[in-house]
Length: 422
Image (cartoon, rainbow, N blue to C red; front, side, top):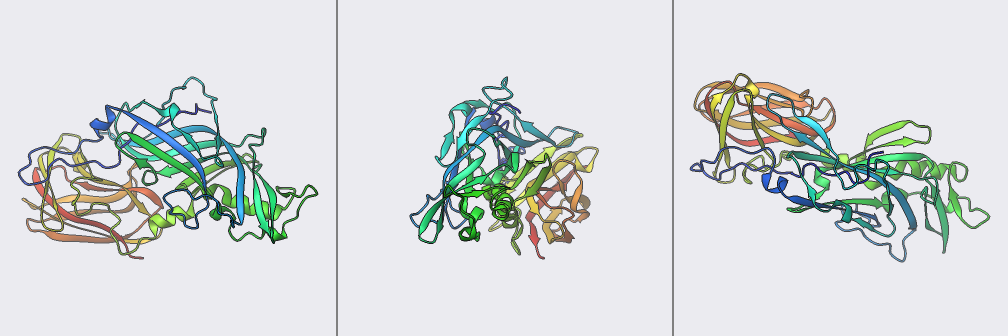
């Protein structure tokens, strides 16, 4: 295993266009944020159990006196924390890069015991992390081992059966190790601190299970394992990892097989948004926040935000078009789409010359089309372009490309939207 203390080589979410009016002459968006990347940024992680009825609680709720199931002991071994970022390199595709940093790199087998029941907080090993480069944070992966000794391979607690609290032990023998992947929107990022909350949601784990019918052992304990109360054990095995509510997960089971999937609760919350714009800051009211401006292959351009009522304009002046349509790009990442769902892409554009641009929705890593690719005619007067499409795959990190290169031109862009319609 890699060392425990791997963490972020980039911590940026929004990228800002310089400029807030037609008269601003500052050019472009920088990929990355030098004010953050040049400083040390602290990282902390907290690990806790949450008894909230809702899965959107901002703070973990402690068990109440009438809680049906209470967890007393829950320990795991933390083995890795890794950040995945996208980087942009001229004339090359964006790279997916796993950033592994830490104070104990040489000890590849280092692990740290974590007690969820005690609300563990880990910050000291992550202090003064120097960010060596810039990029856009996609996910943080947290890896755990289930140790077969020292009691770390079980969850113990009490369950209400009639008017009694009966102790139970749920064996984690189905899992060897597992990874939780938390999306950037699930991570608290501030100016000088990144905090990740790894929360185990009890109601997601146990609600609807009939513990009253479970067999109680001679020792007065409900043992839940492959040999005792097997039906309950299988249900809890299916719910265990999704109860952390990470975006996605993977685990190796007791037979050595690797299982990968999305957590349906989290993915559905991202994707089941209908008749609303799923592109953040599509009207440029927050300047260039959440947009990326990139030039390569001889492209030279600059950008300005023009204030205009309820919907600002993005002005892109291409002084040298470069050799390719994607020599000048306006990009928006982290657009979550669901396979088979139907969407509408619409935006308004015009230019000082009649020309053509390419608009597409694809993967931020492979450039493969996952939604649409259209050659959009651009006129000298503002007009709306619209296309309906179905997502080819499920992708929480799809990327919209507006390729503006090849010709010298000035473009005005407004009201960029992707809306799920079915």
